[in-house]
Every structure is written in structure tokens, then in C-alpha cells.
Length: 182
Image 1 (tube, rainbow, N blue to C red):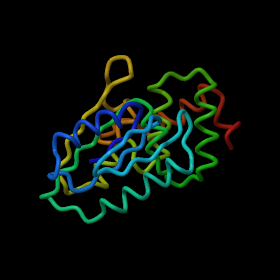
Image 2: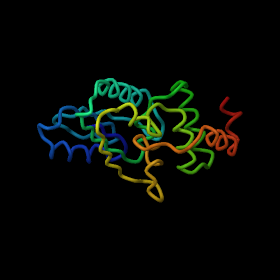
Image 3: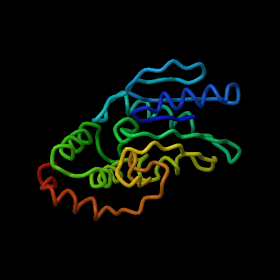
Image 4: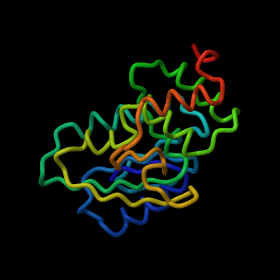
């Protein structure tokens, strides 16, 4: 079990109770604390990524590195997952926080913000699904975005990304962030 996002702890707790001893590992990061029996909970931050969020993501990815086709991973994804579940790609955490702050302040909508975020992360835009391969994945997704686009909710960690780096660049230019963010 892997849960991240606002409200993911409550959903994950319910899944843990249903599965009982069939659940072999569980990891959840959320803003609100929840007590689990067989799942490790981490309290994270939102709306910006942080060291605890990054440490949680990296730790869980190490825990899930020897998966086989016989493994089943239930991924609980909720709003806020873009900040709570993060592992930057070719960028420091400090720079990622700077980009996220700028996106939050510039007037970009959630779809635009998440297009940029996907191209700065190892786990967004289907990255998590790639990391969990060859296991079987069930995604339980609680939407907080208009239109319920699965590739936008928490930046679509288990959904194939159809966006491009060019789109990210265009969004940064649209909001005059390209030069400001160096």
C-alpha cells in the first residue's frame, strides 16, 4: 500500500483494515496524522515540497525496488500529492521549491502547474508506474481538479504523460518565469 495526498491516510486506513494480514507493507504521507496497524505514516507538508516529503518518497521507492509481476501495489492518490510525493529530476529540492512557489503565485491553473511539475520529477507523469514495474498496480484516486483528469491529479504519477517539455517551457514563458527562475 502506498498513499499520498490530503485525505490519503483515512482512505489507506480503511484499506488496511479490510486487507488485514494480506497487506505486507504500507507507507502513507498526509497532512493529518492517522494511526495504523501495519502501515508506516509520515506527516508531510503542503503546498510546497519539503525534505520530509522527499525523504518519504525516496524511502518508499527503495522499499519497492524488487517487485515482481506477482506483487500488487494499491496506490491511494489524493489532492496535494504533487507536493507530498516528490523526487526531483535533475534539480535540487531548493530549486524545486522555488519553481513551485513561483507557479503558485503567478496565476497558473492546476493543469499548467502540473505540466511543469511533471517534467521536473521522477515520480510524476507516469514515473511512479515505471518505478513500480513489473508489479500490478491499482490506483485509487480522489480528485480535486475540475474535470477529474487523472493525468492532472497529483501530477498523474500512475498515468501516462502526454505533455511535453516544450509545453513546460511555454508555460514558464507565458508567466514570465523562465528568466526569473534561472
